[in-house]
Length: 93
Image (cartoon, rainbow, N blue to C red; front, side):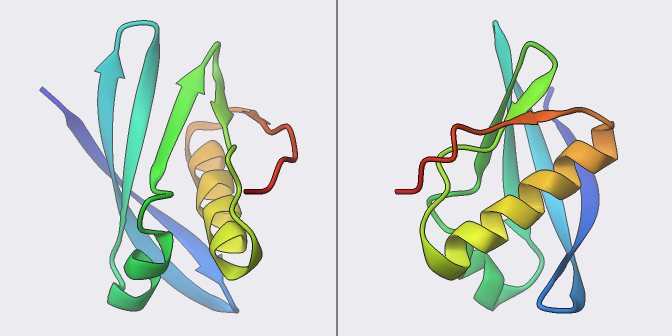
């Protein structure tokens, strides 16, 4: 059974909430994000899955511009919620 949690994050000086659906995938977990704001949910579309491996979240890939900033903010909120580090190569797509 999949677990669902709620996280909050700040984007452009406003607080938003997101639901996180956690899927166990053998060697790692996947965290599927649904933002509870239609415009931001559309902006994150296609970049809404985070992977946890070896006790840290992988933030990559980070898209350019505003979508990338949104993915980074949501990823960091996920890290904060679980008190886990993150990993990023810094590559932008």
